[in-house]
Length: 363
Ligand SMILES: Nc1nc2c(ncn2[C@@H]2O[C@H](COP(=O)(O)OP(=O)(O)OP(=O)(O)O)[C@@H](O)[C@H]2O)c(=O)[nH]1
Ligand SMILES: [Zn+2]
Image 1 (tube, protein in one colour):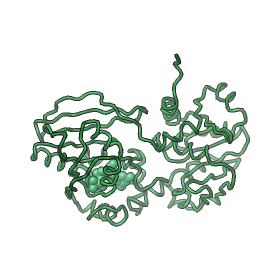
Image 2 (cartoon, rainbow, N blue to C red):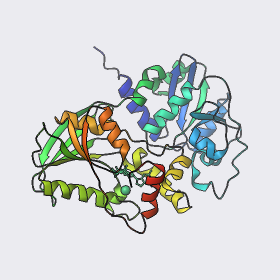
Image 3 (cartoon, protein in one colour):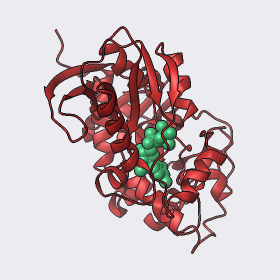
Image 4 (cartoon, rainbow, N blue to C red):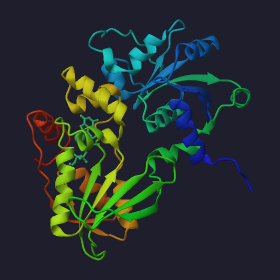
């Protein structure tokens, strides 16, 4: 019997540590490193890291590196060498695009070339799943086991962790209960909890859709600003209510409410993207400047929930072909695409046009 946390549990712990500004230790066959999230770094911890000596680097994604004109020698990322006298302002300037336009000269930034980037790739992986800015301070450690023990740090072997960055965590039904709604009195909310300790996702079932027929379905990604605040910058609120209303009228349907705020980057990062949009960047450019891909969502979650609920075919309410592809790849047949065009405003017209021009959305 062992009470020791397994790799998934240790990863959940590592995410919390990083969100609180606590360092973690990553190990690989090539070595080990102390890792801190740039976003939650403070001046004292930076000074402590620099005092340890050794060559610290700031691992950033290739997307961010391109904006900063640093060389992403490792393909998907760059290891920017941290000057020995680096200030917290220097670290934040590299990690956070907030002041890119006011202070375009961050460098020259010198990226490390050659050597192994396994630890740095894993560092960005963990920081991203913690929904922080995708940038991590990485310092090689000689005696990592001793260091981690002395300082009580979480240790993550990257070979065990790496498969979990790309894999979808299995989800388990927790509870479901009746919820009469404006759209339909025959509503039912189901809660699903992932094994990896990340956010729960919800299925809103309308009526009693038969499991052996294609169900009218919608994969909705959480949008606090649109769903709750009635933001005019996107079309999420009207799409959410429109989809529920359509299911109510039809008497049956399933709306999956996936907690993938900001296309999977989290609300804080989405607000950073909005701030960049106010500086003139579009929705895709803003994500790239932050160091993210256009869309960081995993639509397999939706397909998995549908399967657990017993569905194998959907009539999917969407304008996004990626949702259709992912459904079919994961074994849910899409028998029909039901267009969902609703809620266009003067504020979101450019945003909707960018989704068609750059993100492959159907007009
Ligand atoms: N990063 C980022 N996310 C945004 C922005 N505007 C809206 N979002 C998020 O985008 C997601 C909207 O997703 P969906 O409603 O599923 O829309 P979609 O991918 O356009 O696909 P369909 O609506 O099905 O056609 C939500 O998670 C929003 O929070 C933005 O400017 N930047
Ligand atoms: Zn929205």
